[in-house]
Amino acid sequence: MSYQANLRVWRGDDDGGALQEFTVEANEGEVVLDVIHRLQQTQAGDLAVRWNCKAGKCGSCSAEINGMPRLMCMTRMSTFDPSETITVTPLRTFPVIRDLVTDVSFNYEKAREIPSFTPPKELQPGEYRMQQVDVNRSQEFRKCIECFLCQNVCHVMRDHEENKKAFAGPRYFIRTAELEMHPLDQADRRDLAQDEAGLGLCNITKCCTEVCPENIKITDNAIIPMKERVAGHRYDPLVWLGNKLFRRP
Image (cartoon, rainbow, N blue to C red):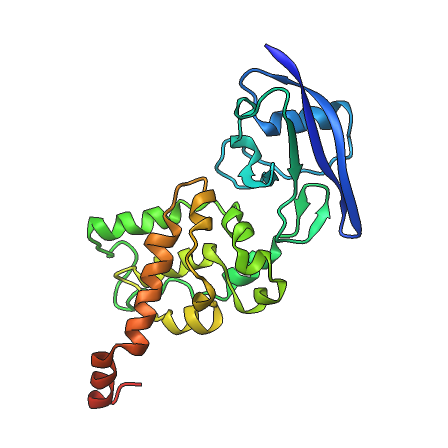
């Protein structure tokens, strides 16, 4: 079964643009990305859209569909009524390059600021041993496909461009938590998370968790535990007393 889908797609670049209306054929079982590709093929050959795997694993086709950050390849057309107009716009938090393609280089800059995995010097690859519960915790965080939907929806950056300099965002709180909770990692990233990554700016509204296509419990399993670790490190009176008694920095 096919029908004519009504689309409104943002066209433009960093100098500005506008929503344009199109009517495009849609078929049973298709996703939004299929219809965007058909629009490219039949009416707007110069439409810029980023995609790769079409299987929900590369994170490339992130966009805002009717105002909700989603993967276009994982959003079925059957989600919408055939008479409904579907609005597709680029991620709002990042600068637009052209049409639906945004400049997400901010995220890679933040990634480089996080110290890498630091195992004990006496252990060689192949000698690492971990409890299964620790493996499971890391595996959840490693499911991240870097679609940056969580970064896009986080209002700390979305509504306040000036915060980007001092705020890494939920994707990099996941990465910091993964390393900080790793039983073999020797680096201490708690001060970095608070002072340089802006962990304290997060007010745990869970909007990042709601849009994660991999269903990572970003807030409950990464951000809140990291806040607890920072608070214990800095403000626990017993820790403070121990540091004074044993003259630890």
